[in-house]
Image 1: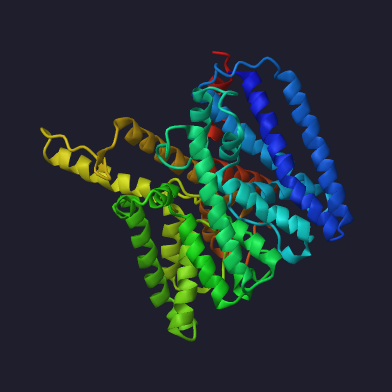
Image 2: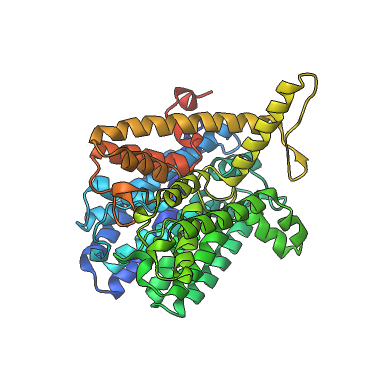
Length: 483
């Protein structure tokens, strides 16, 4: 393990976090929130002291000695440190105890949106801003953001590819352009452009502060609301705009790159995009038809059904209605969407549509080979042969996915809550959705869980956001060996 590179990179991540926290500090001064201002100042001091110490200890680092295990460890440690320090403003302002603050912050950075708060509006505006902004920071990935800033001469290509691979969602990491640093820059340009467009459209019918916070949650597919009524307190126009952008941020960003390159044919032929669109439309229609009795008109019905479909499938987690009251069929569809999630290469979580597509194709090919043992049926995606290493990684991921969910579910049952609450809480946190069913439904929260359960769910949120392996790597002794 290259400990000096790990320490140097962690210090840089902390400095990025400190810079990103400055607008929240300014807002606390503008809105006259002295306790919040003091909390931000103490937090920034702590972050600067830790990062300074790490930079001192990591002098003389050898960036060339940086391999896949260093990339996994950097991703895992960085996201853990972001949560630990990002929670300090909530804790130091006296709004939460530290475990609750950590839960809320990790939920923010991992774009989960699961909250322990029963009275969201009791938070100061600057804290509401920081809470929503963690979604935007975590949506595209803070490590990708840092890679977009780091000069190429600073670190080798191995450093860049292993970091990007460790944080990128999906079964395989790819490049949009030849240089990975330019890929990171391009991803953020698209991300920022869509976010600004979302803010402008929202600001036409809501206060500008609300527009920023809701857009941050939509772009990062996070889902922290800033009012107790959630998105249900806003106009149908706001809800439809948010529905559209939740769907858009669940699309693989490479599709937007292809559109910018005037290659729409490649976009429409993309198997994952077509599957994502098919599931979205089918789920919206099914939930709408089955829940129609709860609403006054078909327009209202489909506004809520497509909003919740986009919210759950993109793993955003906003709510306009209490879908806990929907029929069993509609709730079953939502649980299915919790597991499937959005597209690889998007800001959404979940299993990802590309994995579902590969699972079905691999199963079909395996069945054909069982029936006709003498023949080989290769798995193809978008007309290209899927490498065996990708399928092996998929099977490993699925095994870890199932084991972690089962173990987390068993640990949560210690609290004695009903099975629906316990299993959907795990699914909602691991797949970075936020609201589940039962006590953790759209009108509930996670505040009643024990400290043990909250720590389990924090682990699930981090493991789900980082696609399991960077967090698991931190627990392996092999990762920390010098060779």
